[in-house]
Amino acid sequence: MNKAAEQVIQRIATPDDLNNLWQYNVNSHPGDDRWARWREEYIGYNQTGAARTYAVVVDGVPVGEGTLLFDPGCSAIEGRTILADGASVVNLNALRIRKPWEGRGYISAMVRLMEQHARQAGFSRITIGVDACEARNRAIYAHWGYTHLLFTEEEDGDEVLYYEKLL
Image (cartoon, rainbow, N blue to C red; front, side, top):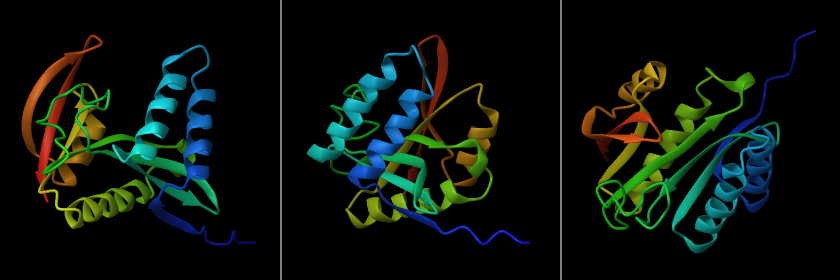
């Protein structure tokens, strides 16, 4: 018997999506209090308009996410207007998908939707950061067009590369 095709939707995350995604993230990192803090921050950013989270929803269950950070006041940006300035530059942040759904193109489709929405909102550039040691993610981001290196920086002992793409 063949399994029915999955119903996959990429969309702006609903409040229920956000709660489900963040509860999963917090539960997946027991003992790491940063995830509970990030949950409050990111849900708050969505409520104030400083950011917008998108979800990959499979058969009604949110299994992947990504967030557009608009405001340089967001903690992941730390005031670096080269990464997001609220006017012409937006940051693509916190891309995650649960393991069973990796490699199916769901995140790529969501990123295209996020880029389209950023372009429609008047942004002309989009930035993304990646740990230098994450060769697979660097290759994926380059495939998506994030090839212009803005700068590198050490964060929490890791070298992070920041790229931009023109929209």
